[in-house]
Length: 184
Image 1 (cartoon, rainbow, N blue to C red):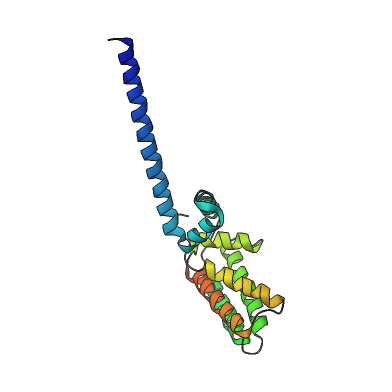
Image 2: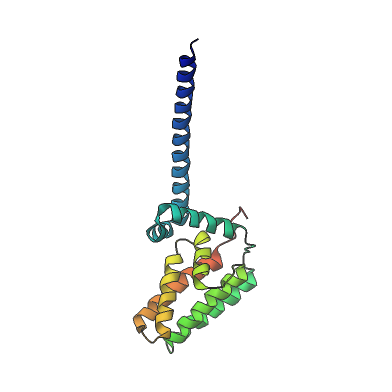
């Protein structure tokens, strides 16, 4: 066989390998995107808007890995009852002191997270961590926290404080009733 035939065959093999590799990479990327969209829902969209698709997918995958390494635990029935009683008292306080109730609700959510095993440093990290297992309510958490901050500056209305309590209740309920995922 002539040398140019070997070169043509080698070139064809290289082209086929590049095409297969490109197809495989796109398929893997598409699968990763679908997986992250399915897990994070609106949080995926929010993060893509903030960081672009590639940056968002990298961050969300890192969040998932970080939270999966955490020693998260389910609350005991006694802890659940105690937190439920504290929540009931916090809601009752809203009638006489809406701002104080929102402050207590924010603190109570952080206490439940800490008890479950989440690190509770700064708010952005807490929201990122909780978004892995509770993506449906993390937007509520962010909205409630923003209202709590506005309240601390005397800028929130009573209706906004009521909405913050509704948001906190959604996350609080999720944190109390959600078992640790089986993969852990």
